[in-house]
Image (tube, rainbow, N blue to C red; front, side):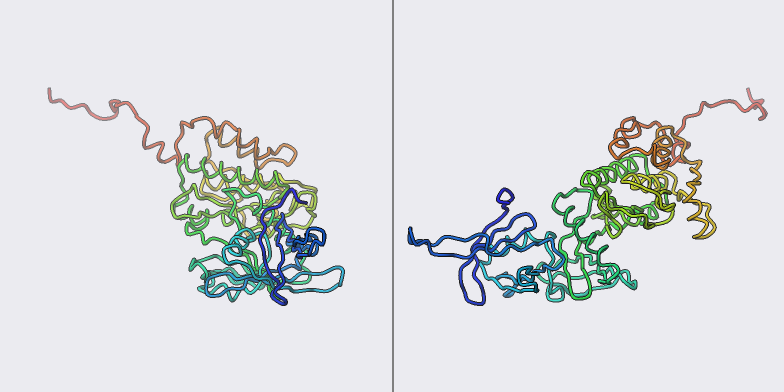
Length: 403
């Protein structure tokens, strides 16, 4: 346990003002009590007095502020010895408490959300979900807030999402949007994220009239594949990759691309046969309730790839939702005639092919599409305009008789 020590500081118990030593480990908070060493007549610390699991769904932390300075914190946790929920308050030096909070942001569950954030506007409102913009009181920044109601039948799914978010925050990747803070209130869990001003990949595609340059497509796909490769390395399957779950942190900057929304994500080995995801992006094996693995995410990226290359959905000819699901289950896609480049088509067909032959993210990144300089620019219309044709005489036009 002592190998993963992250931070230490002195604190005092608010109730009796007794000194304590706080030790922060990976997902664990240990608070030791000072005792008098009779032999040396000096104070030492008993480190194992209280150990609190920060990754537990029953552990929450609220911060004690005076204006903008952090004076201490209140930790609420389940004590298995006493078989009860307990709360303790500690005070510490403002600079140390600020350091501690920075280390715990996105690594522990906070509470008292309404003290820390002010409502600005609602973007999405559903029965169990709300996405809104809030002002962070401490910094004055606008944040994107995702609120999910805690329901008894959905609690395990929500705990799974939190566990995955904590794992991704601990081992971060530049193409995955990190969660700044997580709050757990009585009836909901709240995820705090940066407000991504560049909008979604779908918005970007629409703004560009569904026509992207070849260099843009390569960059976008490379970054998405790198993000997915990182997730898969950590044993995480996203299961809902789509144009709306990819955002740009900055306006008009495709390098700031991020994967978001881990509401359907699952740890590899714990996936069940329940259908989840978005029709048109889902791997057929999920819809057919067959065994599947992390390569379902590659299929979803293949569907995104098709949209970027052609400006069309992979199943563009569906009549209604049921028809779309049927086509998706049978994998009866129709590749757009706009996609004529060999490397593009080859990689695309591999990604949306049968699960037995579908490549990993690493394989895709090593494909010729990303290495070979493609001679065909995109969109195709631009390529045709740039072709040079010889000036030929028209045999059907009368030649001038002027000498």
